Length: 488
Image (cartoon, rainbow, N blue to C red; front, side, top):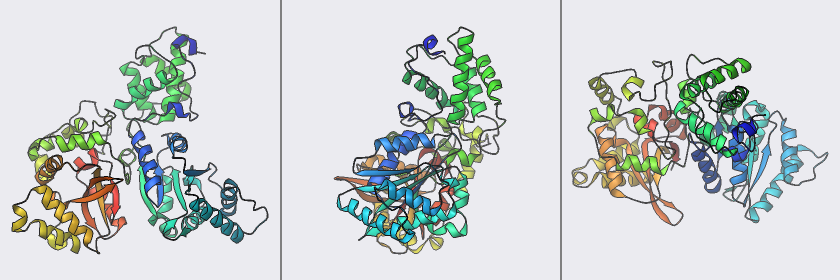
């Protein structure tokens, strides 16, 4: 109805996922690249979580389009399948004729076909949409399928897309075997108010709009509050706002148009933003981190601790997308102003108090560290180490850590496909200022033909212990990096 009025070729805010409207901001492009990399280079089950309407299905459709040709996919859109129905669906997708056959024979047929695909150089990935609604028996059957392998290579990879309820389901004792096989977890965050305008105009221009930005600041604020940053709600409100502006014969979207859309949709401004865990994710298991984020952190001159504590939160979060993510806390129930400094967000206004708080953060003594970490720390603090650069010290500590058998996992802050010692040295100086240098390890790594470097944090006896420790990372690192679990 309003297409010609705004010069559009098609509706810009349809709620049906259409990949041409995929928005790569707010870390969605990074998550997509990380998923592609994970499926191409690693094994294990992958979990992608997000609230209702946050864009999980769109991400799944994008993944189906972007995967390399040697990776074949099986898409399970109906999660409420029984274990037998799920096996039939997978067998059918593999081109098997299994009508009337027993489950054991179906499993054997699936394994034989997967082995054939492996010999052809193909990799098979099962994508489960709405996995939070999948029965426990069916999830367990998926785990048994994942166990199929030839030699040391798995025959099947699995990605579970689900709402946060999936986490609760996997926390049940009878699901621990499946949960232990999840090696990466990506959480899709709602859009922040800073990102919302870019998203709205991206969709408009993807639909053919060529004019100036049309959403007023007050309109954006109302959409942000009423939608809680969830894309489906944003699309509904934006679509009806365009209709209200068309009826009024104007091309500018003002607060009154959004208010009309809210009344029609029965949506009201939220009194508080979603829970903090929704915004930052319960466990960010991401292999790919934006190069510009790492570049910024590695090139920023070292600052004294008090200066670090009072640095603007949003300045630190400006990454490749050029946007910041609001991170409300229990002490800040209402939306945070775009120019709010870190001290206001964290509920304090005294730099000295923040400095003292950072200084008082728990730091494991060498006696309490795992044996491998204590040994590596002792080596890096020896008199000989004092004469070397911080880079050399933490590189030696990382190599020694990797040689130990008792350390199973660490938290990967980021990785670099090039070893640029000067930049890493700057990062280590800031870590030293934060009192965290002893927990940073540098590990040489190969990325194809390139000699790179992994920057790790902490040493843990299990992957679960490392994952549980993510919430204890310094806030600076939680803000700046999309971390992952690295296993030795």
